[in-house]
Length: 250
Ligand SMILES: Nc1ncnc2c1ncn2[C@@H]1O[C@H](COP(=O)(O)OP(=O)(O)OP(=O)(O)O)[C@@H](O)[C@H]1O
Ligand SMILES: [Mg+2]
Image 1 (cartoon, helix red, strand yellow):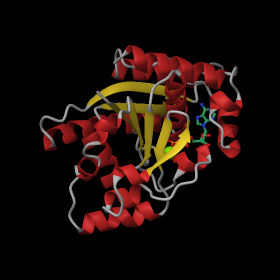
Image 2 (cartoon, rainbow, N blue to C red):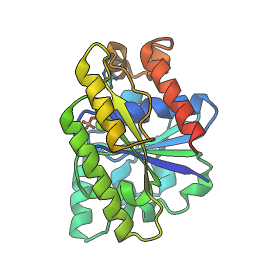
Image 3 (cartoon, helix red, strand yellow):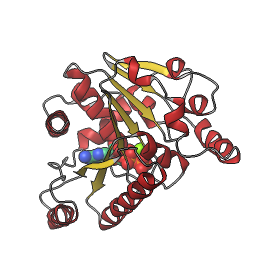
Image 4 (cartoon, rainbow, N blue to C red):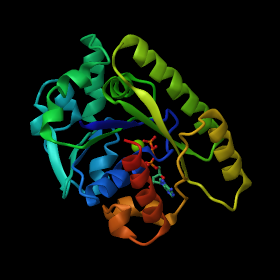
């Protein structure tokens, strides 16, 4: 069965895209077939990976192209469905057509037969139809939380949205699977305080932190994942550890 994970925090810049790209690559390097779907009009997934694409999430949602036609190969075993600015307009059209938050799930009907072991959804930093769509398609919700109090507050809002999605889609088994501390810097007491706060709010599901590292922030401009750009550095070590965590908690 395909595992479908979404990466969501309504606060911006908490490491959602960084986690989708590098976790996706890490899983692909371990031999798993992965599809990363970009649900953010910033389109960072394709630009990070330097992927050339034709069709995007916008056409997928508006039925301009099938899911099969929207898929672009980014790396060995790592495919993507890219997004770009057209997604903003597509979202408006979906709202005008009164499409519900199950629209992504409907457009991706049959994708489980494509043989992906993991589908990773990169969400926008807002409560909108696209993030709702992610919650109505994903089964596992992962919340990257940067070392800021407001990112913790937004993480708790995600929990409320998960509850809402379960109520609107009875039988859809979406659950909070992981809370991932990001931008962790052990030199600062704030990092330790935030992780302690997360462990208190989300017992048992807080992963080992992803450390703040300059290499991780440089990697997108080189269109390389951290495993390609700095294979032995802290970013690779931390994301490889997250890969193991995901594989262990099937
Ligand atoms: N652990 C880290 N250490 C240093 N820089 C990082 C780390 N994680 C992410 N970054 C950098 O921080 C910026 C924000 O990260 P990213 O784009 O992954 O966040 P996001 O949650 O997807 O943002 P948005 O809400 O805008 O979609 C990026 O430039 C990224 O390269
Ligand atoms: Mg992002």
